[in-house]
Length: 352
Image (cartoon, rainbow, N blue to C red):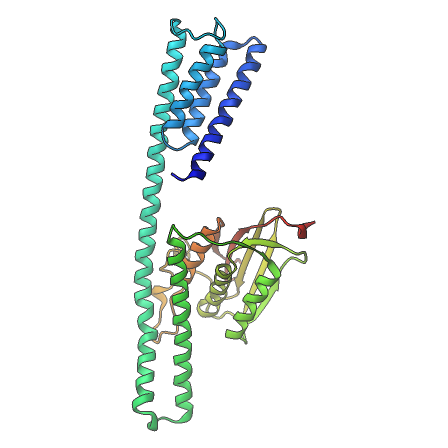
């Protein structure tokens, strides 16, 4: 357990215990001292519930028992365990702390195992999707380069240009795939922490759109962002990757799509990003697991033009989760898909 977590547990325990002492003093002044034991029992329960392990609950139970016995039970400011009610209170508070600690520990262990199982499932899905996806472009690159090398004289210049363009496009796609996979590996490594910096929203969007329009100059994109200066605390490279993945997801996978809308809202504490398109939308049976790494596998066509969207979307979910944000997907009522994610807004002088 790291120092930060230990400090948090200690401060939380002390805060709850001190609140119990203050309430007990108040109850004693109001001459309803018979409820003081219940106050400390509830404090022990809260400490056991909200802290890690058993130690804090047991220590608080001992402290509560001594406080009740010493300061709030006659004879005051003297320890007396001969009175049955004091002994019973001590036993009950200790039992409450142990039982609550056992229950919360089991729940936390279950949640940890569930999260680990989910990560393993996502890794397996990603591995299957990657194996499936890499085969098509690699085969296309190998075939085209072999033909250009061995049968170049039999091809016209136009045919050669087409094949070279296909090699270039497939190579760019492979580079983006590797970037996505490296991002997942980096984030899933618990020893590596995301380095957040303060970024002005306008600069972030400008950087993304410059890269996106260089790759897709003919794609129409409407941008709607706040007029005021908004500052977010993020890893700008990773968030740019999220936006690029979502924008290119619409380009590659939204059939009959003509228009993309990138909209950003700023609330008091959050910045909400939305990427919407007017394409075919998302199959209802795929919405639930769309960020699991398998979306799009069933829809890949034989010519390799319809490529898997799951890797990019899984990367988006991983990056946003690492930023303590949320990401979701839905179908628009008037047609097309809508992807939404939230990031924390940074307080700054710009907001004044």
